Image (cartoon, rainbow, N blue to C red; front, side, top):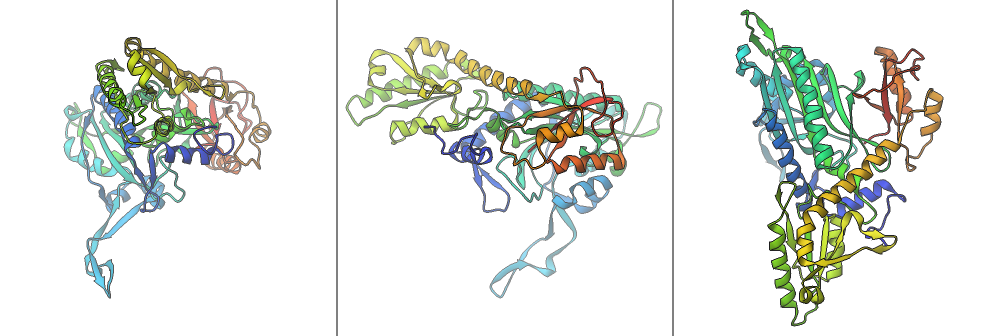
Amino acid sequence: MHALKVTRAENFPEWYQAVCREADLAENSPTRGSMIIKPWGMGMWELMVADLDRRIKETGHENCYFPLLIPMSFIAKEAEHVEGFAKEMAVVTHHRLKNVGGKLMPDPAAELEEPYIIRPTSETIIGDAMSRWIKSYRDLPLLLNQWANVMRWEMRTRLFLRTAEFLWQEGHTAHATREEAMEETLKILHDVYQRFVEDHLAMPVVPGEKPENERFPGAVATYSIEAMMQDGKALQAGTSHYLGTNFAEAQNIRYQDRDGNLTLAHTTSWGCTTRLIGAVVMTHGDDDGLRAPATIAPKQIVIVPMLRGKPEDAEIRDYCASLAGELSAQRAFGAPVRAFVDMKETRPADKRWDWVRRGAPIICEIGPRDAAGGQVTFMRREALREGDKIRSVTLSRAEFVARAPAFLQDGCETLRREADERLRSNIRADIGAWADLEAYFGAEDDETSFKGWARVGWARPTGAALAEVADRLKSLKLTIRNAPREQGAVSGKCIFTGRPAVENVLIARAY
């Protein structure tokens, strides 16, 4: 028996919802399409924020904060931007309510002269500030980041993966030249996002450029990191956009260059969101629940006292408390080990399975023999089972404490190796024609069977030809994820146009 009532093989979407619920990560909110992030999920996000914020600051960016409400006229200045987000915008039209016949409603006399948009993203309002802050080439580059919430009116929502409101960071920068802005865009993609996701979340990704029809609204080029989930679908784990001078022109972001001429700045924007928590669930979870990498587990080692209402319980409690103190003096991943004693008055077995479902990396069960013999009995979450049996190990207390940081590190490496093997072995490169792609994914596929990704030749069609490709892919519920930055050999023909391929692209179903 597993800790969850549904397995990944039986119903992956239902399994995902079960993990979010049973691991105590989040729940649906009374506010339509939004979620309540619970302490264990928020603890994971806070640890992600701390590491990613450090990486962002190390590249010279400074944090700031801009308003949640954006004047509608700001959004309207950039045509592609407003068109891209128009269907997702939530609009504030009144500034107070009025009691009419015992029912609250917007006061007709309080209608705003100009409506506000609840930010879907902040390019326009930050661009307005940049137009005031940047006067000379000496003010460049301007490197900003903010941690905030945004709202996009999603019709079909799923915890973490797609919600109306979510948390994120959004970087916004301005540069003197295209070359500098492109360097920034790719630095964020590789040196910040890719390294963060692979090193801190143990999740391998493929960085690359999005096709023209998948670009951020108003961008000249969009780059993404794509991760493979256990059902074979792709998940976009972060994006970085080169915006050219499009937003600078709309927001009048100009500077006086060294020759005294007024010149448009080149801008970038980039972001990562709380959907990374969902990505961790679907990359590392198993049929017993979440397996949290120790880097982001709010509690890395959980100690469960095996209390039975007997006199020796006091000795067990003291033993567990002192063990936690010793563990907390150890360091893993550059920080003190996060050890915790679960003293809740609940059956020890129930507490054990609660922490298994949450994915605590190491769970210790301390009984009277352990306390009397100076030892520790524990299980490692990344290697919980041997066949159908739970795998537990007993070591002397001194040895366990000394080896605990290495256990945590090894657990992360195991998760990374498993995910890397899944990614490497499930990208097909033998699909040379549309018929082959259709046969692999299946026009009537119910999406419950595992399908990996396809790496195919691409001739970069544009305009109507690209729209036709998008429609054909949509019929199979597929999209082009990106053109990998590491292309390898490019040969053969584009499977859509029959023209010689100029690059390879990845095609997949996606979240």
